[in-house]
Amino acid sequence: MTVALEKTLADKKILLIISGGIAAYKTPDLIRRLRERGAIVQPVMTPSAQEFVTALTVGAVAAKPVYTDLFSREDEQDVGHIRLAREADLIVVAPATADLMAKLAQGFANDLASAILLARKVPLLIAPAMNPAMWANPATQRNIVLLKQDGVQFVGPEIGEMAESGESGLGRMSEPLSIVAAIEAALVPENLPLAGKRIIMTSGPTHEPIDPVRYIANRSSGKQGHAIAQALAKLGADVQLVSGPVTIPNPVGVHVTHVETAREMLQAVEAKLPADAAVMVAAVADWRTANASDQKIKKNPDEAAPTLSMTENPDILATIGHHHQRPQLVVGFAAETNDLLVNAERKLIKKGADIIVANDVSDVENIGSVMGGDHNIVHIVSHEGIEEWPEMSKEQVAGRLSLLITEKLTK
Ligand code: CTP
View 1 (cartoon, rainbow, N blue to C red):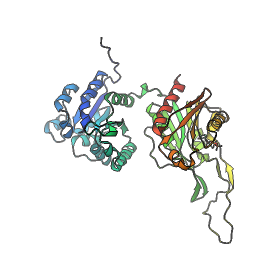
View 2 (cartoon, rainbow, N blue to C red):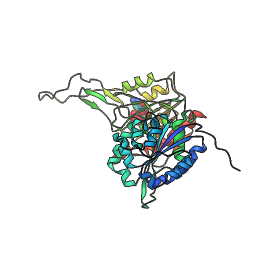
View 3 (cartoon, protein in one colour):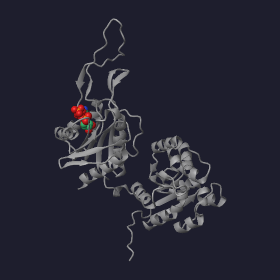
View 4 (spheres, helix red, strand yellow):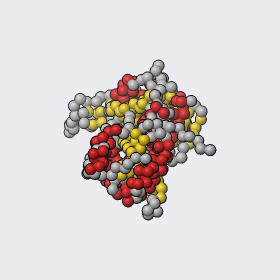
C-alpha cells in the first residue's frame, strides 16, 4: 500500500539550479521528492552539471524542459533569464559548488545560472557540496560570510565521506530529504513550530565607557547568542535580538538592535516587551564607571594615576524575570569558574528564570576556548532538575536549546 504524501509544497514554484559537482547525481531524487509534495520544479543546469547528470534525465523527472544556456536562442526567446529569476517562489542551488558560490558572492553573471542568481528578487537557498579542503579554504569561508550577509540561506554541507576521493570532512551535500525540509521551512514558515512566537534575546558583551576613547569590556564574542537567535528564527520565531558590540554578522531573518552599554541594552529589551520568551545570553558588565569623563583623560606627570570608581549596572535578566510583563519563558546563562551548579541554581531563583544554561569557565588557561571559541559544555538547570549535555559546537548547543524552548513554548 502506498501512502499519499501531504502536499506541503502544493503549487510552490521552485527554480532548481544544478551546478557541476558529483552530488548532482542526487538531484533527480530531490526533484522527485519535491514534486511528490506538490511543487513545480523548473531545472536549470550549468554546462559542467551536465557532465554528472544528463539534462534528459533531469528534464524527464521534472517533466519540464531544462534550461542550460544564457545565449541559446530558443531558451531566451521562450523565457529569458530575468523572467526565470522572477517567477519562482524560491530559487534553490543544489549542489552549489565552490565556484558557483564565489560567482554568487561577487555578482558575476556570465552564464545562465549566475545571471539568474544576480537578477533574482526571490529568496535563495543553497546546498553546498565540495571537497572538505575547498570548503575550509579561506576564500570559500569569506564567500560564505558574504552570502550570509546577503540573506542567502544554507542547508548543509554535512560531514561525510567524499564520493570521489574517500576523504572525510565537512563538504558533503545534504541528503535530498534534508534539502526538502529546508525548502519547506523557507517557503511555508507558518508551518514552523515557533511561527507567531516573539522572542527577545541579548547577545555579546557590553562596553562601559571610561572616557570617549576607552571602555571596559569582556571576552564575549556573541557567537553563542547569535547562533541561538539564528536557530530560533529558523524554527519560525520572530526573534528580536539586542546585541552588544560584536564583529560577527547579524543572524539572517532576525531583527537586530545594536547597543553599547548595559543601560542601553536594558532599555532596548524593555521596549520590545511583551514577548513569549526572553533568552538572555549577553555577558553584561556588572559594573560601569561612576565617574566616566566626557573628555579624554590625559596623562599628567604631576598627578597619580586616575582611580576608576564603579557603580552597579541593572541586571537585565532579573528585571525581565520579575517584570509585570514577564514572558512565559525566561532563559538565562551562567558562566562560572567554581560551584557551577550551586551558583546556577541560585541564579535561577534570584533572577526569576525558568532555565539557566550553565557553562563551566573554570579552565582559566583556556578561557578563550569558551568565550570567543566555537565549543561549549553546558548544563541545563531548571526547576525540574539538572541535565548535562555533552561537549558540542555552539551551533549544536543553539539547535538543541531552540528545540527545548520550542517544547516549553508549545506544550
Ligand atoms: N545578566 C544580565 N544583566 C546583568 C548581568 C547578567 O542580564 N547585569 C544575565 C546574563 O545575560 C546571563 C545571566 O544574567 O543570562 C547570568 O550572568 P552572569 O554574568 O553569569 O551572572 P552575574 O549576575 O553577573 O553573577 P556573578 O557575576 O555573580 O557570577
